Length: 181
Figure 1 (cartoon, rainbow, N blue to C red):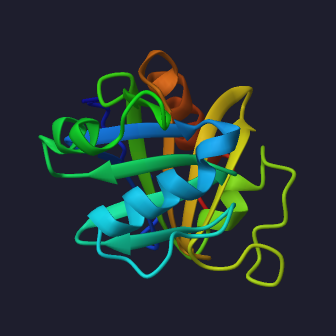
Figure 2: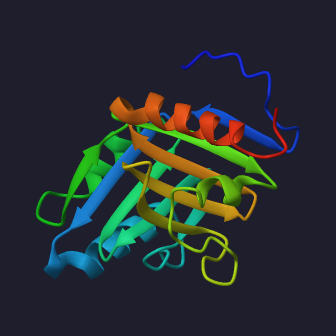
């Protein structure tokens, strides 16, 4: 965990490190897309999985569709990889536990979208990027997976090796705001 005294944080914005017990990537093969969708839906007792670019929350677990047949599943269930590995065979998909290589940041507040738009050339408004959307993009040349809950609530994942740089960039972006001394 990063420890840095932040004595200029605006009252309407918070940045927090978020950790999950399980961060799993599942990538189906082209001819097993329907089968893997059925397996994942059945496991989480969901009527359907999210469309590409969206995520849903099932049983305290985030299920994000990054591309066709490519899912990121995030949960506090520590043994999720073992359970999913029992029902997802290598013939159906590649399943990888990236829990120790990805870190998460929660960015909340009225200026959250403004801060992110300093580096992301994507319109984060609700008109073009609705709630419960997920995208893969870059922030300050760091590859991230960005979950949007609302225009004021984001979850950002990056590789562990870039986490400190991303965190520092967010803090420095706050300093640049006109209303922060």
